[in-house]
Image (cartoon, rainbow, N blue to C red; front, side, top):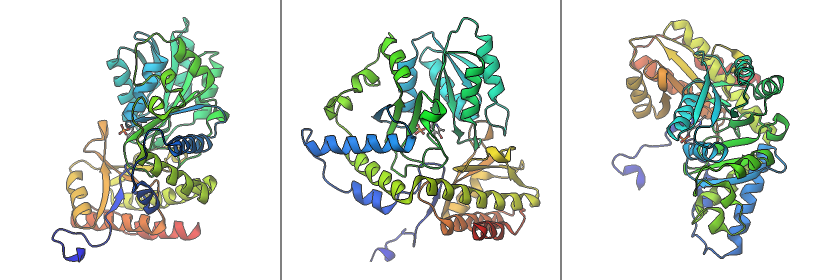
Length: 398
Ligand SMILES: Cc1ncc(COP(=O)(O)O)c(C=O)c1O
């Protein structure tokens, strides 16, 4: 009887980090099988199904999809290594912690980074992107690296406006979008948006375990990568353009993760991508309605100042100084079985974050919010007491 095992928690612990996210049983079960030998034709089929499914989800007809045994940082690195030679410039508009981390990584690998400022609580400013590109009269900027949803600030930028800004500046820079935290939650259409490279990972909206990153690369980005003399091997997109799985993955393919990805893509397609987006929009509205109500207690407030930019994947909540967020998280996790995230970068110790993406439904969101309310009560953090009720109202209204 596992229920009598010391330390066992009855029921599930609710995982409300903005990645890794809850993994559906279908995905876990799909991974629970023996791997194949490298020459098994079913392996090539599995990879093809994953690539085609990702292409459909990304809404791109022709982009090459390359999957890496990595995480989001690996997907960032392959983008840097393929598009930019050391010394070349990239424009990284400030979206928060994740744009800054990508910029630091690009600089650490010898690239020159031009930043636009991050304004706390606001999404990327497309007019600042246009101004930075106009100022680049020598056309040295190779690409704009934009984080679609910055998981730290919980703001989602307007990629259409950023593409328009590049056009308005008459600049040839590529548009590269980090969709690590938005894919499978927020609408994204690579071809229609004019995104040249999309950069993702499996452990968030894709409902897979951590362990793979991927990029989708259009023809123009592919051409630039092919001409880039930067030395590279594992991350090289040219090397990945192969039929044989061992070459495509520069070694052994992560077969069990691919079984999981295949199952996750099937779940998304079965629900329907529009329905998936609508579900995320509704659940995020419920969370934001609860937090709005909590804020009447004067201790917590929504971090993102622009309502239409509030992410459907994650909500960052600023807290008054003097509140111990790690203690709150500890009580919520250990006593009420609700795991949520802390603030990142400049928000460390000043904010917490509720992840609401992936394999989630209304009951799970209500459980999460109620668990956080219980933890706030225990910690004597004042909050408007109708938060869960506001979320219920929102979910009932649909
Ligand atoms: C928007 C965004 N980009 C990149 C990353 C980095 O991904 P990873 O932690 O898998 O390296 C994250 C991680 O949370 C993220 O939220």
